[in-house]
Image 1 (cartoon, rainbow, N blue to C red):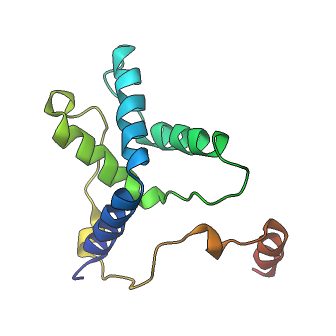
Image 2: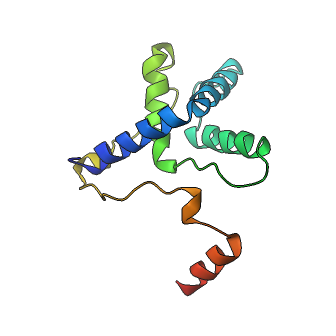
Length: 125
């Protein structure tokens, strides 16, 4: 990978392939808000609703993790696939194109483990 952007793009593509339901929810929820007459909306709100839906349908074990870094990629993908909604999500320049890759894997639920352990780790900082 030549840049942080390419690294994140690849991580997002891998996530997307492994979690197609996220894209289905993204399109559904975005189209719902468009149908209400919104000319623009927050990709952050769409992501939080996806998290809520996925958690609400789960068994209570936190196995689902969607990285906030993917928001820009999902927003741009939506507007590319549905050009009549170009500009629905406001985007910024992706400064990660000029950053070196981190060469770190994306975070997963296993990085956080037990909530008590996580709290103790956070207190150390």
